[in-house]
Image (tube, rainbow, N blue to C red):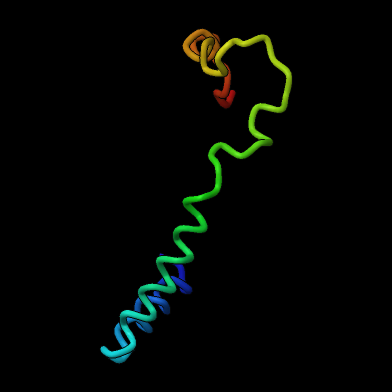
Length: 70
């Protein structure tokens, strides 16, 4: 867990009970902004290719020793 996330968790426990609905609404607003982003981003798949899946030759390449330290 990152230091920022740990601090956020600590701060959440310090929020006065009467402020929880307002803070929760604000957090939800930020989460909706993230959810509204399209996935994958437009820049995915911009490199030309022949349509072959990236991992199609994985077994073959590994059998040939690709990636092994010699």
